[in-house]
Length: 161
Image (tube, rainbow, N blue to C red; front, side, top):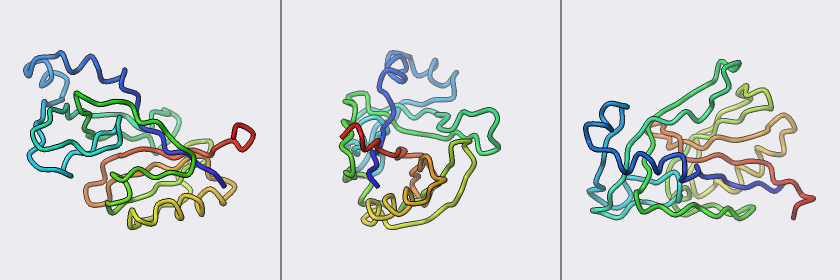
């Protein structure tokens, strides 16, 4: 089974970069400066911010379906200098491969089918296994220690390859 990892679109977050600190605070967000490499993974570029790089820390609804009891949101980082991640079927970005991850497998109705905690180095294998389950429509990938959303994986239509 082929799959693709999908990052968040930059356009959704671009307006927040121009907000003042007070305006960000008013919407429950914060400006953040990365203090060390590897501590602020950007959800748009799917790469870690470098030390000293500016980001916005904002709440993001990653499962918005109001009919699902699994609807969810949480904090994410977006680099102000982010460029959108260009997905490649079957490829895992380094940012995901080097972290302990939690996978949440959902069906077409956005009902969780299963959940797994894995080593990021095993992500490609685990996604392939997850999509072998017929009911699985998408897999949300979270940072295991804090539970923050990182990205999602979708089935790749083999007719588009």
